[in-house]
Image 1 (cartoon, helix red, strand yellow):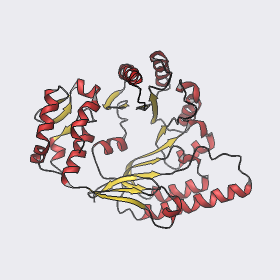
Image 2 (cartoon, rainbow, N blue to C red):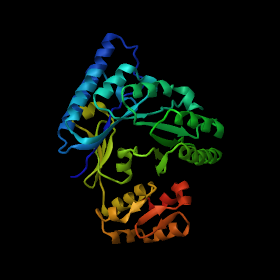
Image 3 (spheres, one colour):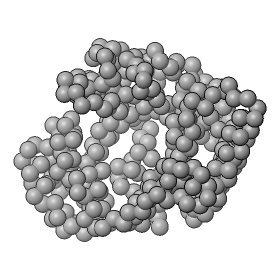
Amino acid sequence: MNTKVLYIHVPFSEHIASKLDQKQSNKVYAHDSSLIRQYIKEIEDIPVKLDTVYIGGATPHRLDHKLLRNLFEVLSSKLSDNYELSMEINPRYIDEETIGLLSRQGINRVCLSIQQEEDNPFTDISKLYDFKDTVSLLHKYGIFNISFDILFGLPNQTLKMFEDTLQNLCNLDPKHITLYEYESDDDSYNESAYDQYISACTILENHGFNQYEVSSFSKEGFVSRYNLSNYKYEDTYGIGPDASYKLDHFRYINTNDIENYLKGQRLSETIELDSKTEISEYIFMNLHLKEGLMFKEFTKKHKIDDLEIFKEEIQSSIEEDLLVQDGTGLRASPYGFKNINDLLMYFID
């Protein structure tokens, strides 16, 4: 087992408020403490040094500081010398004391996530949360590898509103930006979202970002290792309720029932991946990348002849000007990259 990637999911709602009375606070702490103890046991069982750890769940930083220190104390013993340790942060719920703690505990990459409340869709991200203060504090404590998750195509959001928002966020000097499309069944909306995406690609390029994946952009030297490992279809350890991960030809989905998780009933589903499924998923994930599927890397896991399973799909997507094949690999054409869903439909098993 060669994987050196770990995903930790901390499933706590951003609506856990500071208005709790002492009895309620004690109950929450006891619950969180039990979960972190379980996480620590699982981390200790990992047999390798980790190069990449991503702590997600939107608000993992809202854990009690003592529990965070306990978690990081064990986690630090599992990190390689050249590690990337990322954590999602919601700028609406972070303070200077917590940022200082995260910096001292070894966090060297932060993803500022924007959570949309379904009953209150917002139209201008930059006005919802004050990113500027959070970014300034992160810089103060030596954290400069900052990524923004940005929604586009929001209801009532015009192209100009989105462009102004993106320009404002770029001026805060993030090193990485990921775009997420707001989901809608409205065809007119989808056309508007496409225009925003195309405009975003131009704006980010003008700000010095390199697009290495359909929705991911980075400054030189700041590609997300965790993102890259996912799109290269690498194995990953997974910890926490609702975590999903792939390991040794199996996909594991952890239960979202925290009480069952604490009882040791961690898995809700285990899926064995046959050869065709793995090849299909490998192609599907790698085609998200600008460099595409590299034959040299593919043959480390499969035989080059295995691609013959999808010979017709490859040929059809080439004829549709969605895919390019050369001596080094398969990659989306410029047209296919901008219309990635049309290309990926060929490779859904």
